[in-house]
Image (cartoon, rainbow, N blue to C red; front, side, top):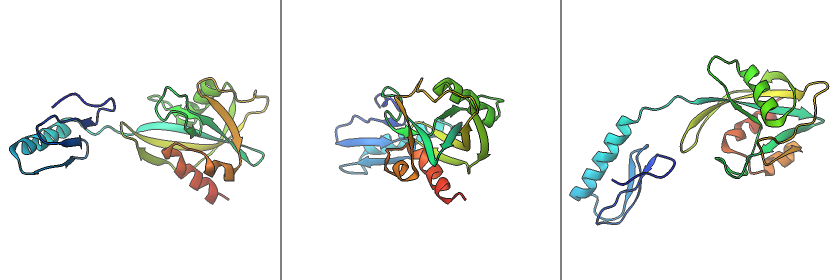
Length: 187
């Protein structure tokens, strides 16, 4: 078995028969050729053993701010050099150990956008599994705090105020779509 791809979940197998990537995490190898050859049986065994060695990691707690103003919400575009490059998202970030989600959101927005927010009610949490990690998204409805400066992208490529209709046309990160649905059902 050779080294894996950067995401760490796929293991390339180099054997005499044509073999495509085998998904070690889900144990569903996709082979072309005979499926009962000794080499393929050995490969499946290695994949099974590898997946048994990797314990499932708990979801990463991530907060997101749905900052509302005048019927629009603020979205931020991820930088080109990071995971989910140039996709739009509700700004936020990871919750540190022992930190309350609302406090984490205030901290993250100050770091990422340089502005102050007033955290409102929480929206339903949702869990999303990306290829390399699983996150538990904790979204909150927010507003800019009185006297706050305008949001400015410190860590993002851009920020935009968008209407609900424009929001549906954006290339949003997959984890943010349940938040859009919750917004459309909110009173």
